[in-house]
Amino acid sequence: MKHVMATLLRLQTLEMGDDVESPAVSQSIAELRAKIPPQILGHYDRMMARGKKGIAIVRNGVCRECHVKLAIGALQVLRHGTDIQICGNCGRYLCLEEDVATAVSAPVAPAIPKPRTRKPKKAALEHAR
Ligand SMILES: [Zn+2]
Image (tube, rainbow, N blue to C red; front, side):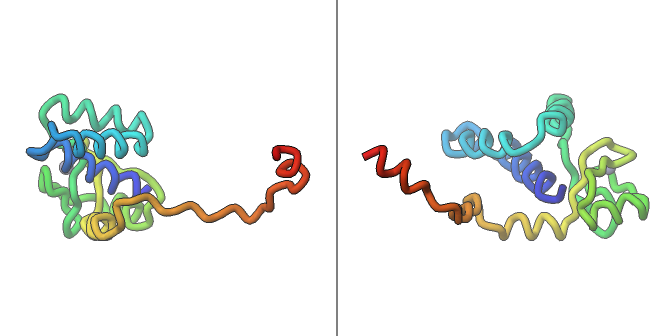
């Protein structure tokens, strides 16, 4: 689930930025939103509607928004990326700082899908001509 949280964090950065009105940024926002599951987006939007950040970065095991130390179990889950974690104190989604770094350095463009190895049906191609 790390990529979902990284995507959410990128979305939040754009939505809280000064360029949110520009067409390029709103295009990016739409693309990022399309990648995030609706229920996660819903919780995020409710937080943002209340003027809060929807996702917080975790540094040294501490939520950077409310400065409360996370439970070891929650940190383990975050490290392994097996599930989403919400800060027990402020209710924000959590994203490890080291995961943010890898997400930012990753290319913005989506990965090119591998070409299909399945050969097209010869008969169908000839029939189309
Ligand atoms: Zn918190």
